[in-house]
Length: 100
Image (tube, rainbow, N blue to C red; front, side, top):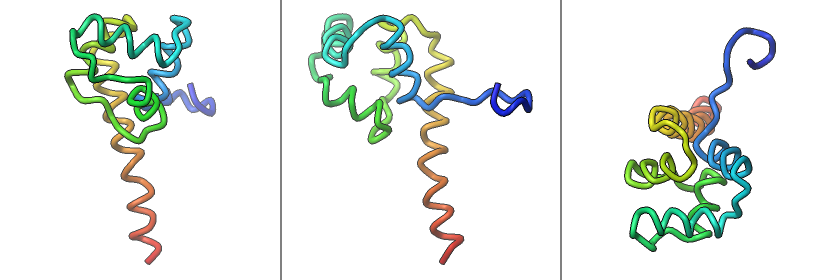
């Protein structure tokens, strides 16, 4: 709960990946390797995991499915985290538009 207001702060997808990866004791390399293993798709790399965590990219539904499996988090939580990341990307743009 944030600020004692009773509202729960929604993690962005990058924050969620960092949190769950830490709980599982995985490096970015290890997470990428596990994602490649379960999906059969070696297109994911440590660099891509880093982009997700830094909010430079939001993993699409395909990778969110595999993140859910590898990190043991319900798909609904991934969807809400992706939405939170999209919303946080819009805020700076809206502020710039209102300032000008």
